[in-house]
Length: 370
Ligand SMILES: NC(=O)C1=CN([C@@H]2O[C@H](COP(=O)(O)OP(=O)(O)OC[C@H]3O[C@@H](n4cnc5c(N)ncnc54)[C@H](O)[C@@H]3O)[C@@H](O)[C@H]2O)C=CC1
Ligand SMILES: O=C(CO)COP(=O)(O)O
Image (cartoon, rainbow, N blue to C red; front, side):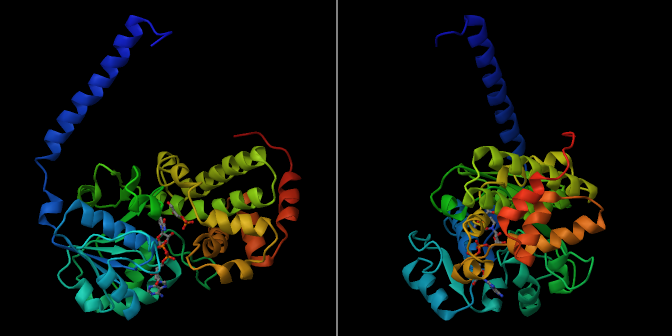
């Protein structure tokens, strides 16, 4: 390589060798831990949309004879998966591994499973869980994939998924939250991806890591459940703002400024709520900002479509729409000012014209960066 001295080349090689030595030691240590994949026989996936289908597929790819059962809502959906090995509604272009099956019967899906993966949209989660709770073993870990804040009529109450789940089940359940930049379609393609598994139970976070990890998926662990949950939920609101800038054709400078401001607002709120700052710049936070269908909602709003038109034409959930007003309640409760996220909520809730919102934000008093 030109422009690099022998000493520099040697030092780069030493750095890499150090990483390789660390990896060898780490693998040796991990081999002394429980082989979670070997001891896992059955995993139930609640929700047969894009993400439930993709994560179930990853597990089935990790272990060929793992029984992966997706709990779906209609017989037609179950038949399509069982008979054609494709999910006709979501990601139909991909063939599913033979060990992935589907049922509409919660007893069949949930009985005897080692893990339950929750991939039902946030706003439907509580009612859904109430309906299946008698089939959920209180000891089986539930791994939450849904990203968003629950809506409630209460003035200050904003349920996070780690509250929605026990409320739906009517009891506490071993719980981990998975979040990060993980587009379902790219998981199906086997593209390299990283996610974070957060739990207050360190052992459970480690088990989830060993269950999902593969050469295609890196799984970090964390005990900052609040940080992982909040950043995963709030980035969907910021993504709507970023999409609007795009739809309004305001250029890359404006887009970058909105993303930077929105990240700061997420940090202000989340750290007040107990999140660790490093989580917010990690996979579930900064890592996941631009990777979202919620952005499309913003683009279309920016181009002048109404929210009703947009939601009416979408077949998939855009969690940021319901999360935006919930964030406003948190902002009031924790006394933080969030101009960009508030503008998104006003556009969604009050029909404020996105151009007017941009003007209002631009006309706010000039401030120091920190
Ligand atoms: N698709 C993706 O790439 C990713 C999605 N997520 C999150 O995963 C969650 C699920 O998203 P997707 O699978 O993409 O959604 P989706 O819109 O593709 O599918 C939603 C699924 O939930 C089911 N569902 C809807 N309402 C229900 C109800 N009341 N009871 C039972 N089932 C119901 C639908 O039938 C469908 O199977 C969301 O919170 C999303 O933010 C997170 C990371 C990536
Ligand atoms: O969270 C996601 C990718 O990590 C997907 O977000 P959307 O639901 O907005 O597509």
